Image (tube, rainbow, N blue to C red; front, side):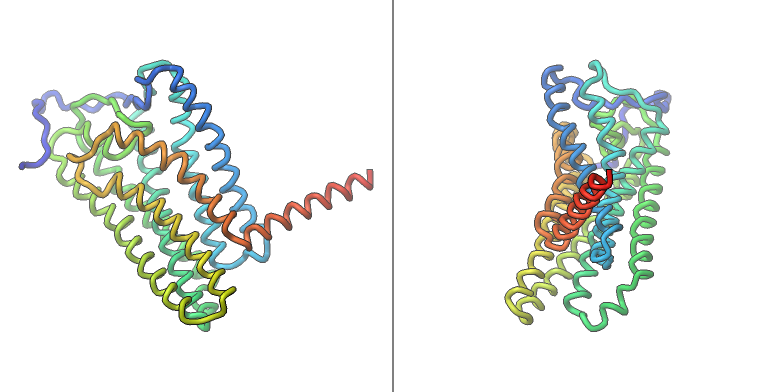
Length: 329
């Protein structure tokens, strides 16, 4: 088969004045209101949970370690990711049928931020796996290897790499002419949903998308699995039962998050555009926009004793402070 080109004549290749994000505007109004009522609490809980983790990682001295530095950074990225995607999606449930009109620049900005934040998250998960590998498999040299400066350098590299790939991918897509109108069959300006509207030879853009998936999904996932495999081997060979249990809980939490994140992302993007179903992608987006970001704080806080202890201390200090203030008044 040849490259994906449009059957439309080139004279009809025009840039749309605006994109229309269709979302679920074709669904019955009652169902859309129900979805809004169900997803709004999830959105608020996601923001609260990730902000709680970020606040504890910053304020609690016991959590000033590389692992919680990366965990706090991941929560900050999740907050930004949620703010970029969810409010517009929720608003779409309450708007009249026909979708939401956005300017091409707004559509490109949303796409770029989505890729930059999602890519940074992928790389941060790999950095967290490397941190656990060094902490458990190289304990003697770990303090010298994972210094504060090194942690900040890792964070900067993750964000910069995600941003560079996002800028390149977004620029490549929006350089194409569009001849199929501006109807985006998704809840936001997602890459496949916009790319199918393009005219001309999309082969280069599809290759760039697959390369980005390789760099942001396949390679980090391979490093994560390799790191945690070595960690598990070391855990099985040394330490007492309590130490092994604590290490396994930490590894299990990180692996659960990695499987959730990479599983959804790989299913969505690591495949040819011709095999994509935008209707299915739109339904899957409800999971990775609303449910997956909420599970991150739940997994890390419910399964992490250090985080639980920090939260209990913070609540105790607040209770004591309020009691002391009440006595003074």
